[in-house]
Image 1 (cartoon, each protein chain N blue to C red):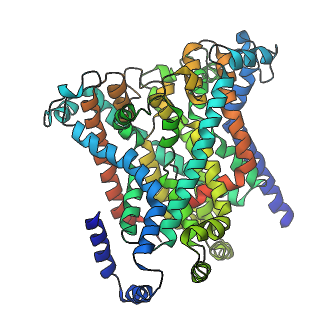
Image 2 (cartoon, one colour):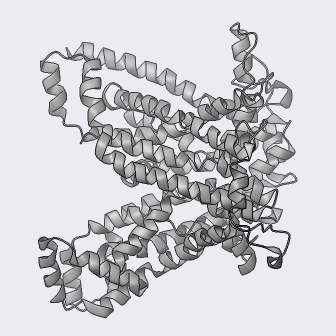
Image 3 (cartoon, one colour):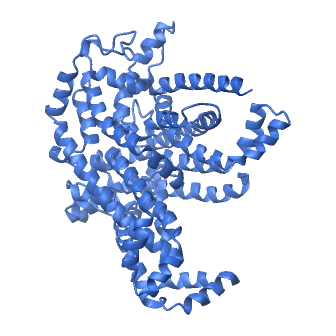
Length: 277
Length: 322
């Protein structure tokens, strides 16, 4: 019985592996094309392993050319790391407040904040743009960082975890004279550290991939992030596919590495939060 | 602010007897009162202030702007109140109506995604080895940069030289579709990419939903000699219906936010065949510089999202099998 069952399982695994390979084919094609000389990119049947290698030249052009990816990377890393830190801080504080402090107006404010989650962010771009011009935040990294720092998703997700922190611990700490900030910093925060790690990874991925805010709120090429860079690179070199693919690989790969390292946290975090935002 | 507080106390007063008892306990709590409230507001202050400035204020402002004919180039002085003119123009604007129609066509991708995701989730959950590896594989498109993905598909879907059409021609299809260059196939192409990128997310949520189905149900069905298909249709589908509903609503709301993919892939073209309201809003606001008109589009979007959210509340009671 067990043997025949395992055999069926093996067959299913092989079938799914084939589907999986087909599913990943666009990625394989992207990587393979980025390593080729331009003339061989569109040859058919597809040569998955390049005939003539041109990887060094392609990546050299992308990384140091007219829109150097080295600079884009630095901008993206700066914006992404600062956004992640700010957002984790803001959401974590708010989540503790919503979960563990019983103050007047709490439920109403929570509902208002939650309701803003449904709204397509593009509908706010016009007035945000006007506001940013007026505040002098247009075309600055600070402005960009602030746009992704007040996450409803993060607040909601972390709140679920703070709700799980036992009230007895908090009450007894208060009996000993600790204020909410002390309890937050030395008791609650350490207890929800895994959830914070999950949210930080998710925020990192989403900010790294963010395209629409840089598109609207950045103007100077020197401030461009990687996604904006890939898009203008594609517009500029639209007919040189090998370079476009090298640019795409450069935009995707670092993130894939972070995802593979933190995949357990990411997947569990998505399952807990239920939604993207 | 004070009216909010009052409304909240009213809600609290109306609560059940059980929570009243709780509340009595709270009033005897030495940590209640204004200090507790102050601490609470301080904790949520950064989040609340940020959301107020970057979300709530823009909503109110676009409400006001949608009744003006203002544009970026002319100063504040040149803005004048024009009543409902923007909205009348909007509902006579063929491009806007087409973009709205396109958005509803895109919704067809949701059930397709749900069916594929549930199928894969059931197989991964029960019938194969290396579960975690497969989760990662199917999840990859979801975390990949949409911009890079769109750039790759621009080449893959190239009408004459792209690998997809070269493959189709090699297996004997002489006139393969022009994909993103063809007004008929452009929107389906966008939907294919959309399905590809969202299977991962839906799959992960379905896997969590499947964990909640009691194993005894399947064991009992097996003893009764029920086939795998019978178990799938009579146990799995009804019992994951809350998950299906959640994913359907999430997909519905997400479909009104598709922006990056369309901007990079087609910019709404060819001939507006892939235009959707949020893309059209962007074009009107930042290319045509019609601030008032684009705010009217934003307002229409708010109303649509509001209606969907309302229907969701009703639907939850009617269709979900708990």
